[in-house]
Picture (tube, rainbow, N blue to C red):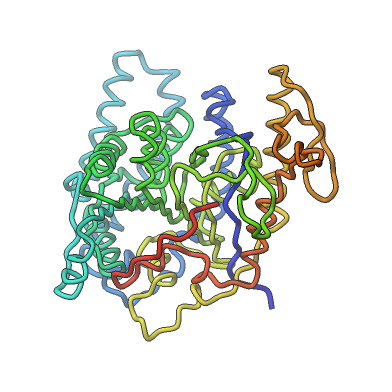
Length: 460
């Protein structure tokens, strides 16, 4: 029987051949392309709220007076913003400049007033019961931060951080990515992805994460993003690489759910090939650690947002930089953080068997190999353009490609030709994942109930 969990191993890219699309394409062209991809995903829009029925009080779609109020406000915003988008071209063509600016300002004011009951403060703090508070005392050296996604109001964010705190036994700080309706949030996603725009929410998140990492009393910072929060997390991480030393950034761990991000950077510490110093049987490859040791992404197959975000950019744009393991619940739908992700993946009821955690994964070996082969191809193009001497390189399956990559001098002096198989690290990772469950491959679950995972091997 086929597995319900598809697993994509972390991108190795041992010589940094990949890069983000924003680094290679004109931003306006990228914006048009990204909008087209988003429009093609709209057929999955109804699935973001399915399954709808729930009995959990902290679920986003649990029927109560406040949730009904938020649903009505979101429906009103959605209808209004669609009408405004349809009328915008005619207004731009027909209205004089001054009147157009006044009308646009009035429309923005109306959207803000409708959204106002859902806004609240920029940061919230999890509320812990006595048991969670006792567990949290054992982890005072850690900081956990969460950035929410699209269409999440202040009340929804409070429920999210409360759920995270109860699940993992730590206090959680929530950075409120404020909502202005589904259409408004998706437009902001486009601008953030294609123009690297740091909204107020992204700037607040950056300040908090940087402050936590720079605190010498903090030994670990866990950053979690959901939906649009995944974009904000990727922007924060990009800026941390320019502001903090690698030693400090290495305290960070990143986990996303239904991420809408188009990339996930995580540079290698070294590109120099090096051999194992022991007699242990290991692939002879230039393995090295990355700046952030642990990155994981969790998705539902029919959730529109990750199909446009992490899934499209990992599965379709093979030369794109997207670090981290990817877990996909095949056949599953829904976009709500508590209801469609936390509850089925990390249930609070420990007596209930977690079908997600105990499922043996289906390793997508073909995709993983294609991603690494594409990275080797990209590096070859860059090396030829720079005038680097060309050497034959083993790209896997016995295929030799003259791509101008580094030759391992130590292996050459030992009597071999020094050629390196740059796809072999991924082949080894695939071999290690075969036959394993999500519980065996995931690091995040080890934090449940206040646990602390052993500091074992990092992402590589």
